[in-house]
Image (cartoon, rainbow, N blue to C red; front, side, top):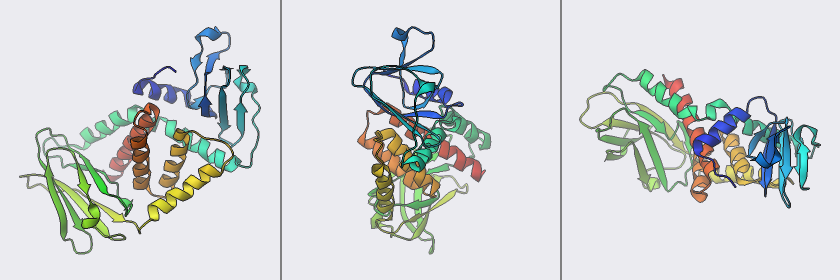
Length: 308
């Protein structure tokens, strides 16, 4: 199966997402597409996501492909041969509501805001609000909101236009304003290990990052630890929704569905933590990496624009 670079994958999906309402959600074996009139020997491998309905579908022996429409209809092709995608027979299923929601989530992932432009756009926004060396560190992650109480570590991340600065991360209890933890680093991130030695479930906190030896003010961001097991209960419920459908889904659409559902529920931290866990479990899945990273960058840009 041909290998796409990260940029190539993103470019493909950004182009293909425009105006298409058919999406490939399961690809098994040799599945290719080409334009009408083109030599079929030059057909390209079908990729997960939006599909051009004006193309031909070429299925090899023992190959399987499943499509959905944004409206929830489902189509499965299992017989080797050549098909006009526009002529495929889509059927309503008992899972049409679920599939419609999944289709909407996939489309939102593949829109321009989740493209290769996200990172560059975020950088441009940072430069636009900066004031030279006086710019304060911009806090990135965790986002304002709720964090799982079961975390064994919290990955604090920030942005600052300085390559030689040393930073001090500080974590405070919200109610008492008392400092609970501090650490210095020359990096723009810090892994806070064993946070439950300092933090309690269902309590609110805030964190700051300052440049060591600087007297400038600092930015602060709040977070709250959820009730014990809340995160896992929500994820398990969403996973059950995915598994209850009779239509098999591969790992990427499953991950998209769960992450976007968490985001819709107001749990952006949950969404990112879940996505990073999936990525850790699938380190060689390049397409998963593309979506998780670009999704994170789009959230960063949205957060930054809301603050400034």
